[in-house]
Image (cartoon, rainbow, N blue to C red; front, top):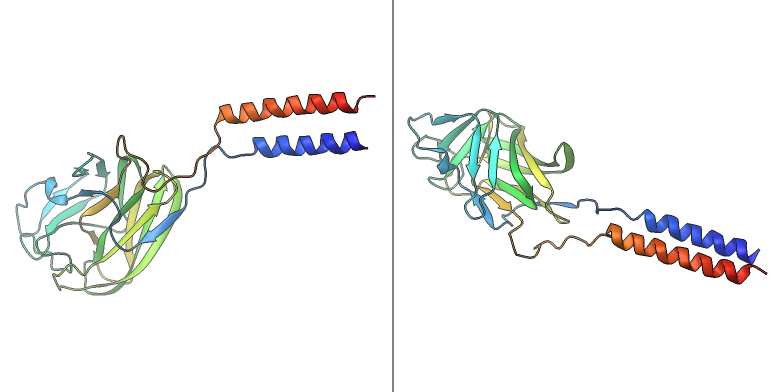
Amino acid sequence: MARTRTLGIIAAVVILAFAVPWASADTLIGITAPAGIDDVVWSQLGELSSANGEYYLPVDATSAYYGDVVTSKQQVYLFQNNSKGYWGGNFYPGEYVIEGSSPLTLTFNLGLAEVGAQIQMNGTGNFTASISAYDGSTLLGTYSEAGFASKADNGSAIFIGLEDATGFDITSVAFSATGGVGGVAIGTLNLQPDPPGQPDPFGPSPVSEPSSLLMLGTGLVGVAGALRRRFIP
């Protein structure tokens, strides 16, 4: 009886050991202020040539510090808030913004730990903004926030973003807005890349490696052999 009970315990430990996941699940947190160390400023898309802004398809922009590439295959307009381009909104005076149909989807050339931007709708009034983050085709999470679109021209547009608290797995985001009028516009894009040679600022939890599991399994086999010799009369 004692031998049977001991071997049952060993089997349970082996099962638990090899059930350890290779990677932890992503934990996403909605944020209302920039938390990243990198930015994409839309003025790099080119010069505005008319009062209606410049038409771009696709977006192909590079971040200011680490060279992260941001693309979008949908049709967008480039405007400069309350200046050349005549976007009358509550972004910062003279800030370059892009406007497109909702959802406005942006993809990245590498995984990020945070993405966000100020957002508003074309027409004035209340609206609800949302941002969804993806790892490839897998939805990681969505965050929503209430906002008010005006022509205040004072930087009061709400900021909406998502932070991956467990790693750098955000490969695309979709900005959307409902309840208001017109398309969705976003200002300067804030990002958190994985800076080369620097520690992960969000501290992903360590996971068991194959070699560690192999050693654990080998050790359990040794324990099983010792216990077998002990219980054989």
